[in-house]
Image 1 (cartoon, rainbow, N blue to C red):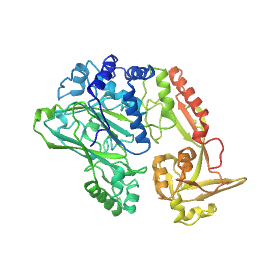
Image 2: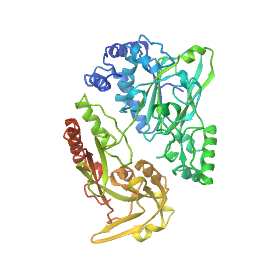
Image 3: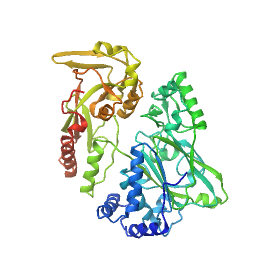
Length: 517
């Protein structure tokens, strides 16, 4: 793979001289560390050449020109410690005294507008992880293995997965040919028929949790049923792990086999990550693997160390407000879970839950945030090949893309002036992910029933068309719910107030300003 950029020795030394001054320990206080890096950017300390490199990467991601980028000869710590292979994470805490590698990854994340993601049950909630051989996980399918890894997304079984991964070569023997393979999801689509894609979009598959995840949380055994193909070309798949769910139809099994064949046939990129290399690539819109082509230095292979980060573009409503709140309240620590499950604030030790409901919740103290208006949408391609929709009575002739989980519906409530009616519809795809439904609608799978703010950009771009002008659909309300507790932290109340202000100031983006489509 051709590098996106290679630092000259002078450029590397210039940035190293800046990052070596970072004394904040990201494993003890990540948000203090995060804000220290942010101050370097705000003070215009970062060299312009690196800012331009990150701007290019950010632009290529947004334009979908490229989802993978390789930087070479980047600055690293002067001392790279060796870790005990029975407990390498704990050993890292003890031995790592400088944080140039971590600072470079954090700087890269901030400049490419891709915040880092942490998991409470993974490495003590660290934002920086290690691809490093752990003796307990030898020859397993985890990031701690000393062996090969099949094509996969990271955290396949988990409901929250990073948009991007970054792997920084901290110690990599050049005597070994160990490659990271990268397979763009768009390439995979070209080897699947439309019928196979449609079947892979249905929640007919499951993925067992890996050994490392199960050890971190014994309740993690097997994922809920999920689709393999999501959004436009996102794949939720781990080869040899992801399989069809019990009682899945034969067509689902055939589609899974077709995907396995597509992985073999599709063109791939291979990167030999060397010391001082940064390989950053899409996690959900691609698959990746590890291949041990030639191992001439077995000890070097065991001591190979990649520093790894999970990155996300995040939720368009909650996460931007949350990041602003964290930045202005540096001692706050946050665990964010994006889910559609019912949350018990008292039993599950949750401070704040964002709820979207028809009725005001009764079991908690709530702050009304905004009205969420819904609409009916279809792609021009779908409309060109299906019966016209001229009135609500025509909807029953079409397949619908609907939400699953607690908020699902099989009937739509519509209003035209004083006229109200309820019409039942046939569901062909149900998902708890609005973006998955959006992209299925763009692909012409059926008619989507979506919040207007989700469909707004696709409608403006002509990828979707609103149906039944003049008719309005239901309105739900977004609430912030929190415990009615006199010991509740003042910061929780501050965050709820800030979130309410953000929603109130952004009515156009979320579509509750009473527009008709």
